[in-house]
Length: 199
Image (cartoon, rainbow, N blue to C red; front, side):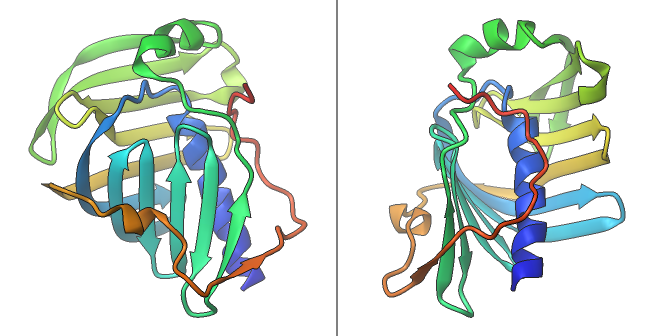
């Protein structure tokens, strides 16, 4: 249990880091197959997106993220338990992303490409601090969401991509902890820095 939770937190830290300056808006409601690759490890699951919230379902558990507050909940259905991580700060919005991003990186529009059937603006984001690496992002204007992100950092490359996207209503209940689940204390373990704004 602790091993799977620790691994999940490492993935979450990396994901928060690459989403921090993605210029998120109130996204369209959709679900999709989710693929994440980090080094030799590949994770496949499902994702549900509504407004500023996202739910990721993998074999080892479920993660619910509120991108407006940075709050994250990791759910273990088999044990009927969950861990709530405190808010890590909001993601940058579309209106403020360019201003905030310019403080730490440059973003260059390098064209458009079709990803999973959606026309996307492709950006390359290069951080001023070379130790933070760089990121390539494919942003769908229709969904108001990046549907493919490749991050190149000190720990290697991380890919996040959505496939088989289905637009449509997503139930609010998917972003809540089921009744009867017991809250666990945060495990005492190191967690990679995600570069998330704290204010």
